[in-house]
Image (cartoon, rainbow, N blue to C red):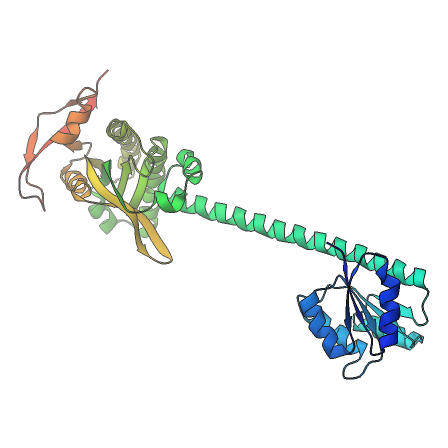
Length: 362
């Protein structure tokens, strides 16, 4: 598109002269006869350069320039003052007001055209810089958004699967849905008695180490951490990222957690802490999705399977990994169990047959 030039003068003869000088340069020309009309044309015509008379009725050129520099949309448009007022004081006043150049009447045609071309180059450079700034701002916003998404996902997911989740549509991924999952609950036997007699700093130090070790294994087996409260931790597998062998992974993770807790237990016993880990595992269908309110959302699972895993964990003695019969059926070729026991769990009308996973088969 041709460059657009707005010429402003209260004398029609001067407007005709300016338009004649610019006519052969393939510019789009618009005219204004006073300052008020000039400001209106600046808005509607959006010129690339303004040739502005100094002395005009209603509003002089100095006031027009000042008004233009106050508006975001017009502050960067180059302005050349064209006037018979050629004193040094007038030039300084015009340039201080915001004009970019100054041409004294009567002007030389070649000089005028050279100054217009110079202002057009400045305008192009300015527009390019603005576009680069917008592009940079968009890229920064996108990167900040990506960092925020990663931060949200890492609250739920292990780092090695967070990247793959980011490649998908996060909003659809976390919509409420139903899926089979394997839930793992764990907490420490003896923690209530320990916390009653220990100093707050001792409790925090113990939990820090315990959470770090259990969290490391949750991430290792690519489980989704739903929550931890004190010594209680809940994680599940097969959502939001599908995992065909989710129950096997859950059992392997629990066995390694038990081994890790055994090592921690040696350290705790030296300090006089009588603590051990109990784990409950259950596999079934649950409803999953975001829960909470605007500004504070968590990703969670709702259903009997979470209650069952939690109740099995409550019944597990130190060093036990309790599973129900349905869950065991999915991994019986993998594990050796102790004899079954019948448990009457809170919230369940019928007794539950539970098995303690003694070890993995060789």
